[in-house]
Image (tube, rainbow over all chains, first blue to last red):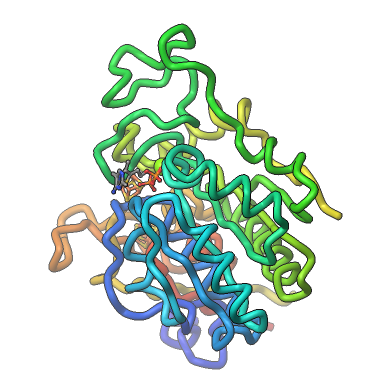
Amino acid sequence: MDVNDIIKPENKVYGKPVLMNDNNMHYCPGCSHGVVHKLVAELLDEMGVAEKAVGIAPVGCAVFAYNYLDIDWVEAAHGRAPALATAISRLYPENLVFTYQGDGDLAAIGTCETIHAANRGENITIIFINNAIYGMTGGQMAPTTLIGMKTATTPYGRRVDLNGYPLAITDLLARLDGTCYVTRQSVHTPAAVRKAKAAIKKAFQNSLDKKGTSIVEIVSTCNSGWKMSPAAANDWMAEHMFEKYPLGDLKNV
Amino acid sequence: MAKIRGAVVVNEERCKGCSLCVVACPTHTLALQPKEVNDRGYHYAYMADAPSCIGCASCALVCPDACIEVYKVRVD
Ligand SMILES: Cc1ncc(C[n+]2csc(CCOP(=O)(O)OP(=O)(O)O)c2C)c(N)n1
Ligand code: SF4
Ligand code: SF4
Ligand code: SF4
Ligand SMILES: [Mg+2]
C-alpha cells in the first residue's frame, strides 16, 4: 500500500487543533509550553467551550500565548493573572476563566495572588508550567529551582544556605480549603500527554461547575535555560524533577 | 489478519527540528532531514522509513508545535 493511499481525509486520526492558528510559535524548539498550548486548544474545542473561554496570559515565555490560540485572552502584569481571573470570573460567571502561568510568575512575584485566589476558591483553572527556572529572562533561579541546579544566578548550583529550599507551591495550594482539584502532570511522553489532557479537562469542568479553584501543575522543561537538547531535558526532568515534584493528584474533591 | 498501516504528514515549515517526535516513535519511522532545512533553517522531521508507521500518533502527541498529522488504515 502506497503512502498516498493512507493519507486521505477519511483516514485522519490526529492533526493541529482548530483553535491553534498558523502563527509560528516563538518558543524554543522542544519547549514544553507548545505541548500544553496544544492540549488547551484541543480541549476547549472538544468541550464546546471555545466561545466561553477567557485565558489570562502571564509574563514569562508564555506572554504571547494570545497570539496562538484563537480565543479571548487578557494579558496580566507579572504574577497578577489570578487577580485578573478573579475579576473576570466574578463579572462574567458564565465564562470559563483560566490562567496560564510559569513558576516565576506564579510562585515568585505572584505568590500572593495565587494563594489568595485559591484560598477564596475562585471558580478558575490555573495551569502552572513549572520548568524550575525563569526561562524568558535568560535562565535565572526561580523559587522552584532544584538544589544543586545551575542557573544564570546560581552558576555553581542552588545552595540551601544561600538560596533556601525549592518551593513545591502546589503542595501548599492543595492544603487550602478553596481548591477542589490539585494535580501534577507532565508532557514528556505520549502517555504523559494523554494524562495531562485528562487532568486539564477535569479542571475546566470543575470551573464550569463552579466547584472552586483547580490547579494543574505541568512539570516542564526549559531546554534552553537548562542548556540541554530537548530530548536530554526530558530525561533530566524525569530523573531529577519528579523526585521533588512527584506526578499525580494531590487533591480531588 | 487485519494489519494497521499509518502515515504522517509533517508541516515542514512549522517544524523546529526538536527531534522529540523521533524519540517518541516506537517504530523508528521518523528522522530529521540530514541536509535539507526549512526556511527558518531547521532540519525538519520526515518519514525515513514510511512502511513501518502504525499510525499510533505518539509523535504528534509530543510535538510542541503541532506539526504532525496522522493517518491510519486497516488493511484486511
Ligand atoms: C514586574 C516585573 N518584574 C520582573 C519582570 C521580568 N521578568 C519577565 S519574565 C520573568 C520570569 C519568567 O519566568 P517564569 O514565570 O518561570 O516563565 P518561563 O519563562 O520560565 O515560562 C521575569 C522575572 C517583569 N517583566 N515584570
Ligand atoms: S526559554 Fe525555556 S521556557 Fe522559554 S521558550 Fe525557550 S525553552 Fe521554553
Ligand atoms: S504515528 Fe506512530 S509509528 Fe507513525 S511516525 Fe508517528 S509515532 Fe511513529
Ligand atoms: S516534534 Fe514537531 S517540531 Fe519537533 S522535530 Fe518533530 S515535527 Fe518537528
Ligand atoms: Mg519558568
